[in-house]
Structure formats: structure tokens, C-alpha cells
Amino acid sequence: RELLSNWAKSKLQLQLTSDGEAEVGSVLENPTAPLKYKRFDDLYSYLEHELESSSVQEYLQHLLHSEAVNCGIVENLRLEDIKGKQKPADPRITMELRHKQVKENRLRRQKALELQRQEKALRKAILCEAKLQIQEEDRRKALKAKKEEEEIRREMVKLRKEMAEKRQTMAEAWRM
Image 1 (cartoon, rainbow, N blue to C red):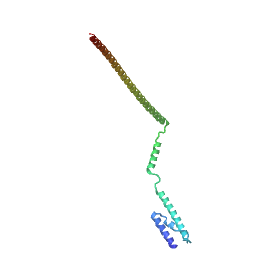
Image 2: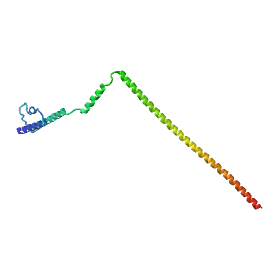
Image 3: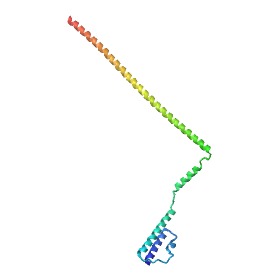
Image 4: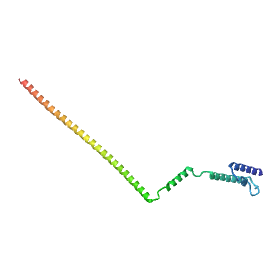
């Protein structure tokens, strides 16, 4: 048992020195007399408890030495704080700036609405022009068709007259 206890102490001492702990002596020195363990299970539970305790201590040391917040985040927060402090303290200046922003926004909206109206009017004018061109084209086609029809009627009347005259001359020629 003493051999096992010495081995555990040396193992613990090596582990603590490798971690850079300064309190190796205080951890290893037991204020009480060396414990005599009656069973192996008692020794094992004691060593397990010591191991868990040292693991917790190591993790806490790691957390203490690690950086909690990224330097960039801290810098951004500091810059935002500085910007916040640079705001004008006079409410009149703030009010004037707000009025100016409102006026600029209103002018921007009015320009956008005017542009939309102009585009809508232009589209409407183009559509009306296209309709007029289509109507004019339809009127020309109808007039052309009417003229062609009239021409065909005249031609038919002329041909009928000629045929009637030919029949007449043929009938007169037969009579003679």
C-alpha cells in the first residue's frame, strides 16, 4: 500500500510540474498522517477524487489564462462608444438635421413619383400611338379593299356590256 501511495504521489507530482503549478508542495503534503487504506477500493476512490479535483483545477486555470473576449469586438465596442459620445448635444442642431433629412427624403420621393408618372404617361402615349397606327392601317386596308371591289364591279359591268354587244352582233350576223 505504501508503494502504491508513493507511486500515486510521484505521478501526481509529475503531472502538476508538467502543468506548471507552483503549489506542488502544498498539494502533495498531507496535513494528516499518511492514511492507511483498508481496502483497495478506498484507495482507488481517493485517487479518483484527487484526479477529478486536479482536472477541475486545470480547467479553471485554463479559463483564467484564456482570452474571454476577442480584441476586435472590444475595439468595435470602444469605437461605437466614441461615436455615441460625438453626437451633438444641442437639440436644435439635432432637430435641424432631422428636418433636413425629412426634406431630402420628401424630395427624393417626389422625384421618384414624378419619374413614375412620366414613365406611365410615356407608356400611355406610346400605346395610344400604336392604336392609332393600327386603326389607320385598318382604314387603309378597308379603303383599298373597297376600291378593289369597286374596280372588280366596274370590270364586270364592262365585261357584261361587251358580252352583250358581242351577242347582239352575233345575233345580227346570224340574222343576216
